Image 1 (cartoon, rainbow, N blue to C red):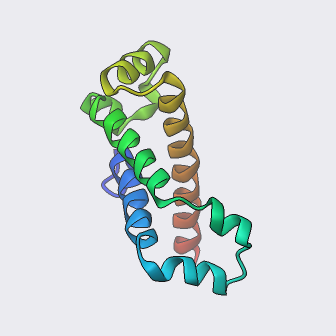
Image 2 (cartoon, one colour):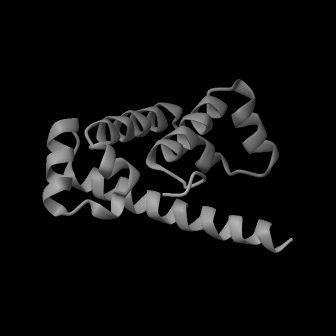
Length: 117
């Protein structure tokens, strides 16, 4: 695995940084100033983000080192084991891996753009 590869640990770190930013009293004001609707502001719940991050960390903590460094190796039976060991549903593990895959692809495309410059 390349030294600069995007890992599940990096993925959770990104969400943790986002969560720290959303705790700020200025965050809602910034959203409002940028034209966010009152409906969006009302639906925004930092505690929900915290719960999501907690679930992500629990799921990743239940993975073997091999699984957390190469999530493509995680088959259905491993997903069930990870879910059972972390106290989350199999759907939550599946969603974590899906989101990680999307963000990993985005990071690769951004990296490719940087090298073209």
